[in-house]
Image (cartoon, rainbow over all chains, first blue to last red; front, side, top):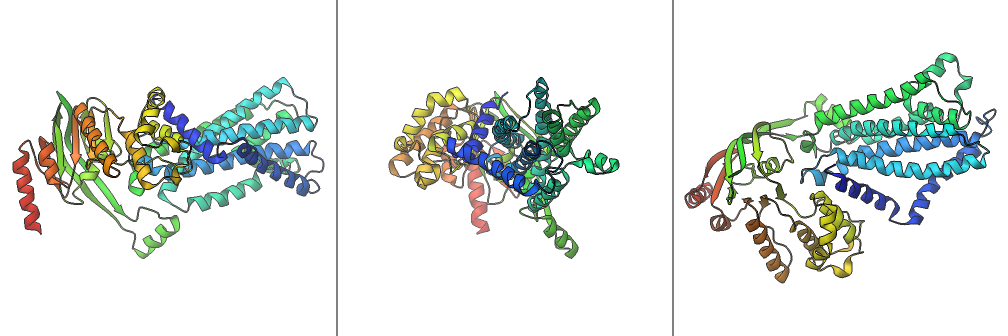
Length: 250
Length: 247
């Protein structure tokens, strides 16, 4: 790859900006998801946690993917605009910035994932071979967030207020992704509706394998892949259609 | 040998309510009928060729389309019509600092900026010491970039960009930076880069400089190609006359 060195430099830049290049900085950024988990555990256990086994792990699955989704799409959204001084002066494929911002979020996700497994261990979860399948939803999540990142990054160049609208949308999404409640109490029809939400599908995939030790069916697996490729495809189309027009808006 | 060929290159440029606008503003402006986008040809039917050893000067008043033309040649923008053919790598030295990040150290910034300019990892590792010494920033390697003085920043920018070895070089004014001694050093370095490449394009407001350095000249006015040729003296005189008449 011709631009691999530039790509690693961009990832490294985002990395040292985020953690200020220190171990303490990395621990610090792990602390915030853990604090969120702690608060949710205290607040929600009595309301939603009853009857849900391994509620801590259940919550953590939800937070894990929702934080990644939030962080990766937000970082992707601003990546083109923030790097505009570079690509309006030097000819560089602009999608590098979007993908590099995603890698940064993926690093953070991986760190949180290690803590997640530690919590699973504390929560008395049995580690099985099925855990190897967990790599699949991580991959589809990366495709999904890159796709959405491409769409948002283009929109954000055109319209400044996309950032506020996306923030509102994320809040809505956090309520309908069943992060802290189980969908089992809803009617069958409503349960089906939840499956149109790709973020919920990812969260639920983790829960099925980690907590219930069930491998999701082939249709479920297929939908996960389909959603991600769909968003990635649409993202690439929108990006390619607009990439040469962006300069007039920056 | 032909190194660069522009054939009928035109660029349609858009200005107006395009920058820093939101949905809300756009809708409000559209409702009030105040939403305006103006399209015009920033460059129209530009045609010229450069051969090995050529040095082209581009002249024209402000807003005549010089910068847009440079952006098209350096592939930052895509021409609306026409084709550009080039042989050999091309580098545009339009500015010294895009890509520098205030939070990162001088060392990190050197690698980042180098990567943006297309240098390889190996090349940068080999030349890193040279860059730092040339920029006279040896004691500041680990200092965050934002703490440098503006002189230091441009010295670092120049030190990195001066390692470039393009066959086609594009310059917006001859870059020379810093004070006294460094200015001399950088000017000399710039001449070396120009001499080692095979063709150079120079945009300058100094007719004197163009007369001295260039063997070909392109005059554009409001996007239209007025003159192109190798009679630098005659075209410069004509341009000078045009400027005098205008004022």
